[in-house]
Image (tube, rainbow, N blue to C red; front, side, top):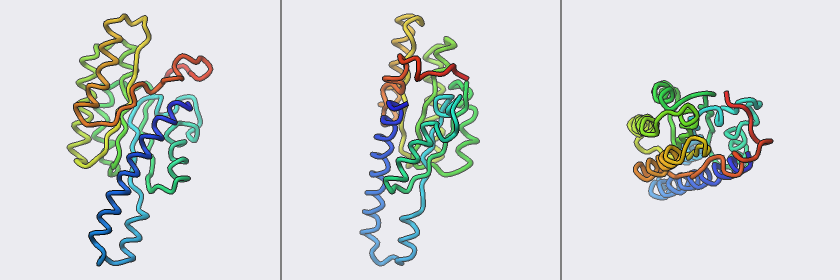
Length: 204
């Protein structure tokens, strides 16, 4: 959990600070704007959406213990105007996520989108090319709906028993998608967690 939190916190803070700088630049060029409206704009929160499976949903944990909730606490303590939305569904595959994303995007505007899907595909032996296609489709839909969204890809890896060819192709799809779509990349979401039994729960 500490590894997950640290990775996402670093990226989210970088993204949030980038947005804050953009807002500051815009304010500088509009010095004649009404002070009250400017203050309201500064305090209005933007949405940071985590879209994923049980890792995001916090399967087996209290809602307040899921890592998106912990990141919200860190963002609040840093005084950043971001609202974290937990869009995780336990057991979800990339195909199911691709079917669900349109509905989720209609619920609220999104400024930062973190994509965390594919682990269940790998555990089911779904071909990486299919996972890659589904994830790209999700990314395309997000960018079409919110062209200025900042994107983050959470990478995943499979255990060796899936075979060297499969595990290699699977692990490579995440950096490839991140590079293609100009996304910030977390190489392996479960780094420092996956191989520690006490930090793992049976997936839902």
